[in-house]
Length: 84
Image (tube, rainbow, N blue to C red):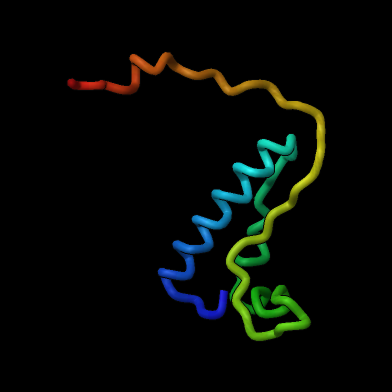
């Protein structure tokens, strides 16, 4: 992002949501690599070296891999009340 404000964090989250949904549709696995972002001194070297003046908000790893086990889910009626 061009700045590092709460609104930038929100927009990043919205963009990541779209990327993760699209990756799932394409059969990709995704994981977050956020350890480097937790240290202020490491965030600056992660920026785009060509643009140089942006803030890194998220680092994702995308790729194809073996399918994992499914997460157990509760029935919808156990967690959602629909009132007319």
